[in-house]
Length: 465
Image 1 (cartoon, rainbow, N blue to C red):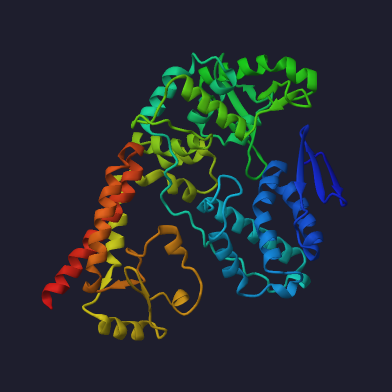
Image 2: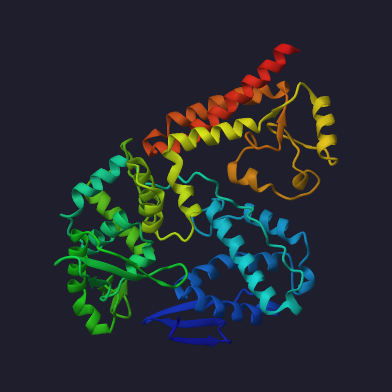
């Protein structure tokens, strides 16, 4: 919960003070007819999520305000059932604001879409007369898919551990130790206070770690943390004591700075990423290929479930360590290296593959099962009635990047050349990804297995003809 909130209507800025940190939320680009509703929405998010998370949400939703300006939407009449497709197309053709002509990453597009969805959902609930029937932003068109590759390769992890305890920067030491062992989010680590260590009754040097979560704005405790990590946290508490007392701070990731107008800085994600990569460079820690390797602070969290899965640790243990509310969230990261689950998912996908001798057979089947027939795609034909006769983007296609293995896809021997070529591509990809871990390699092995099965079925039909 924030301590103080001020709204400067002239500058169109919301200033929030939370735990002695000043946050600024700009709403200059919000269309005039939505300004009141957006300010009320921000107030709700501040209470529900906290200032830092709300500031990030505001950053993502700005693209929707730019979209409204481009589409000349100046009233509620500008919102119609097609607005979702237009906004998706807008995000798909947008570029990053820094780094030149680079398209937006899938995660960025997803965050933008979810921010808009959240705004309309809350506004519809609190102001139904104004937002009635404006529930267009549903679904998940920017599904990031099941495979997440942002984990740290094992050789790099090994080098990080070898050099860590002797490294001179106590902030980097403490951060990596916590992230690598408990998978805490970066904002949770840099948000640790001087009261985060709590002595428990299990031993002379046993401590619990108490912190505020970045999601849900609640508190969580990790019981009986590792002694080495507890000692490093205590060292940082002692090290930062002088600067904290001087500026009345409680965050232990605070440091004196002559470059700041306040005389100090509290570490953020950008500073931490820079410090971590400086640590890699100073210790000559490189990718197995010999190239420089850059780490983001969140990659440690992504690495935890992969390490646990390889060691055979129960998935519910991983869920508790990572602080996931739902086991389904942990499952996305956890069981990709599990042989049984891999074979099971392969078998289920193969069962769904449909092949026909020719277009006539597809027409007969499509008319019987789906009166709206089908759409021609790269791999064959799509029989999904939700996408065949509309401009709607199929979320499965966006999430997977291909249609083979989808139960709505059907194909014929005419498409064998496509699958032969795709098999070559995926085999080449597989040769290049093993150093990123078994979970990533499994993804490509899965795709190769599906393609091979399709080819076998199509070649069988071709021989019958």
